[in-house]
Image 1: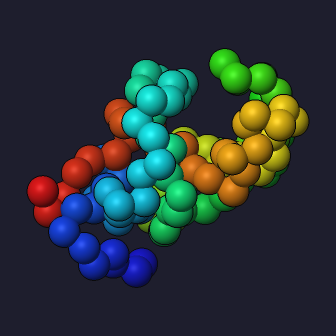
Image 2: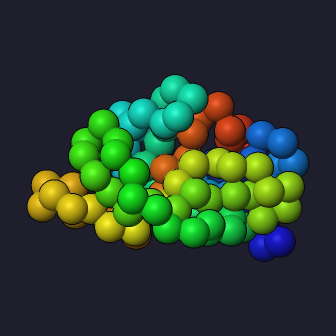
Length: 106
């Protein structure tokens, strides 16, 4: 897998596969399935699963779970489509659950 180069990296908590940079965080004020989650503009070394419509706290969205490319653990999801105009900024962005990632190089 490609290793991200940068001072602050987030990795899969199971296998330490690099999945995103701290600089790609858009917001830390999100809720995942298992607690707090971060919205990222980019993710790397993940596999995007099938799309499905899911009713979230902010309304109906089309999302796809994202899995670590190495160990296949579910790390969060990708927003594919937002149905409400106020939520369109999420399209193409990634949710990584805080409980599923660890900080490296901090």
